[in-house]
Length: 213
Image (cartoon, rainbow, N blue to C red):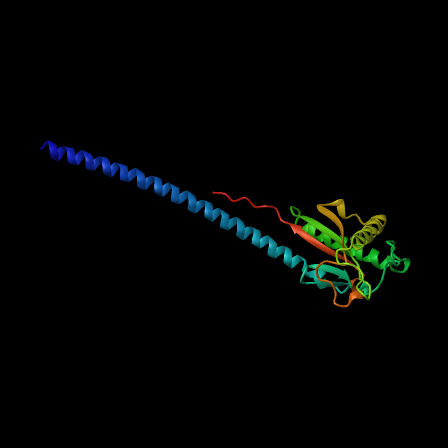
């Protein structure tokens, strides 16, 4: 009789332990599933914002005054393709092309203002990149310091001209990056003389969406 009583006490203890073990596993599983659900919902929300941004870039991509380089998501002014807007070996913009460059700046600024109006919580990185065409005999190295420094100075000249004309990209949630890729860089034109240009890239910086559980 005593042995039977001991058995039932041990069995009850075992069942109680199993109950608490199952309860703990249930709670852990529930928390993990809620966390994963929160992550998925946050990722879906971020994807919606990215798709929304892509739609809002369509007007600039389809603009008749710009040529969109799809492979590297950059814009160049169609009217300036293949034109040397700088004096040889100099960084000042030729007088004949200043007005075209200014109009390009106004159009970009107007586009950025429309983006800010539609997405007040977003910020943007505006990259002004100077490019250079190599000589006919390709005598300049792709990593030439001359090419990098000169192309940067030319991009800076473009920015300074826009700034002088009252085109203030930094007035809102826009960060401006001025750089030069010299004789290097992505999306170079196969016709080398067409690389005498500057390009524009607008990169949206989407806020991180926290997930909740």
